[in-house]
Image (cartoon, rainbow, N blue to C red; front, side):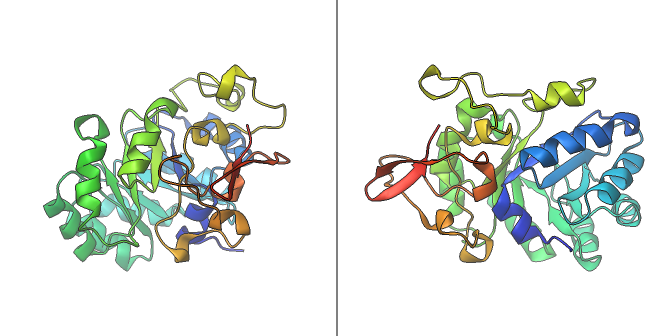
Length: 274
């Protein structure tokens, strides 16, 4: 069964960025990510033999995750990724030729932007989503102002220096998802090490439960709602929303560890228990 971008994004709005990963190690690392609930996996083009890694991941996780390339800078690279079975084209910039080629190929285009001018040029060229990059040089206040004019149903992901401790302000500013790089994977890390990744601390200092996947700790500080009904999970959980004062929004279901109960009710809505 094929997997489209709205479905993948609604399941878990986090892009796993495997910068520096090698083809001979990428499949077990991919296993750890997919088991954890990740549905979007990026292999940057400045990694060792990235096309080989993308081909391996795309073949192994067909129907389970969308796999593609990051740091895509040319139309030729778009074609290389397409031939390898990749479906995601992620760039640090907004090159309209790259975006248009991606759209023509029926692939997901996620260009980087920093200004409204770049954002609207990318949208006009056919971007599927946008990534605000580098996030370290922006602020949630800037994002909030941009979201006031950007299309409501266009996902905006935040990339660059993201970790569990700084997600919440970005979600308040209108972020729909995040790209996780060195906070999730560093070159040389084994699949076992990636699988053990956790947020620095759990709520109230309690340990994560035995069956918790590692996607959830990254989501534990803030739950992200998809930008439109088209990207929402079909379960009741996606409809649960707490007050802005509580700073909690609906969480896509697979980002909740298997078997974890719903948590306390906030203004009549459940939030996930930790």
